Amino acid sequence: MIKTGLFLALTVILFGLSATKLPEDTLLTLRTWIEDGMGEQTVSESDKVLTNIQRVQVNVKESHPVQLSLDVEGEHPDGCEYPVLVAQARRGNTIDIEVYREVPADVMCPMILKPYRGTIKLDGAFEAGEYRINVNSHSQTLNL
Picture 1 (tube, rainbow, N blue to C red):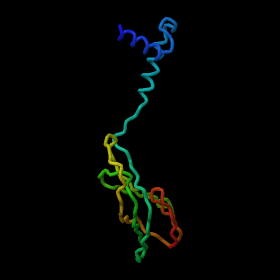
Picture 2: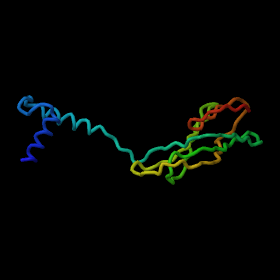
Picture 3: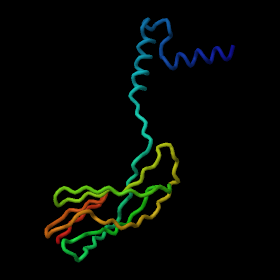
Picture 4: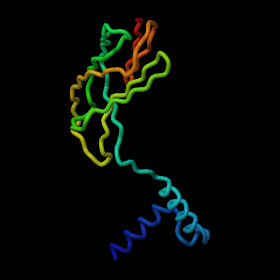
């Protein structure tokens, strides 16, 4: 008796109406909505975790043409041990650098900050002019 009474109480709370007051197609409509909503979910195999950049020092190699490298300091936002990846893109005098790690989506990482230091050699040669260097959320201008 107690289990049956508890089940009926939960049914009333979930739907807010007794089953006799619902239109005949209500259950079908509710089921379709739930299935449609679930079908739109996407699952990624890994997440791109950006490194928090705190300092970027530009090193100019005295050569012709000029070559540049960056000494980068920052921290990883978690304690997972995955390789650091660097992506470079150049559009005119703007250089975009991404420093990140690919962390599997199902991995639980310890919530500690881990220091990062690295040197990044920039691709290509650089002529005299003003350059904008973006490393994740850190930006600076360089005049050659």
